[in-house]
Length: 490
Image (tube, rainbow, N blue to C red; front, side, top):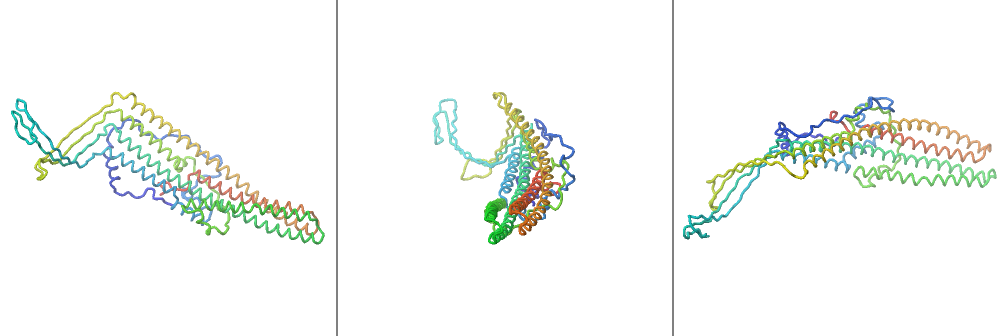
């Protein structure tokens, strides 16, 4: 399921620039606050957990617990072709380019430069003079026109004495890491959505199958009732009641078929295909996927390391903190060095390196009065950092809540499913008994109608319960951050 995250390093110019910048700026002092990973309170265990110790491998590919090869193929195709993942991957490229852009600002810049000047020089020799464009002499003055041709290289370097550039690189690196976590979060959400849509597809197919089976049974009962009417054993009321029951059951079938198609269309879009691309693939009905084993859970402390949204929020705090340092550095002096090295000549027709030209210069600037602009920028960046910290804390609390809710929902769903299994068995026996007694004239047709309706309701509820239990399990794995492999496991 790898999407190429953490791919091998290639010595491109951009990567080399970042490496050189890191080495160059490593010894520079950096004003502003150094980043400290925020601390949060972590519960010692889950309230609704039955056991702990789920392995990372199981969480990384949790959908395989359903033992559904078709689901495995859907997940693999979605991870390879989903448009949302491709967009998230493109955002990583964009963020990494910003790292290179900021790092390059701390390195010497070199550019080629050439210019041509035509200049009039007028010289005074103690008296009034009149310029002669042709270079002649009038009275006590002289003038001449000269050509200056110059070609060479300009170099400039802003010294990052107070670490402003270093902080901007830190911010860009944290932003790139946040985008990487955003891709992982998108993977987690995508896998969960594929599983939910697949469960919904199979559940509605099973509801439709249950409905068709009940229609067939009710049609047999209707035929029996009509035969008994012909024999004068029942009234027309019994026939009308059975016809009404059959029509009511048949009316539910189109809704289930439509819902199955809608889930199939949703799956196709997640796979980057047109809505009808999976129609042939899912013509045949399939069972609702049910996990082959009970889920386990990592300890709550592992959630901070596994959930990509928490990891992303933490990187955003680091980014905001680095931006505070960059804003503080703007309040300190900036020192720049510039240099030129090249050749010059006076004749374009015979431009040879007979003349050498060079220059060196330095400049320093210090903000003195700007109506509080720089201090306001620092204050604003500090407020943004505080907001990022609160977002991180909120993400952690929400993650704990989602896991606890999923654990409770899954446990309750399993109990409900067990009860409905027993209810279906009992209602099947009741219908067989009621039908037999009706054939022998020992009971009224109302008993048959009621047991038919009860069986259909229980069978439908069982399918819904199986689908809900599987959906709750998907929600649990998603809440635990399953669906991608941690860097240390890759």
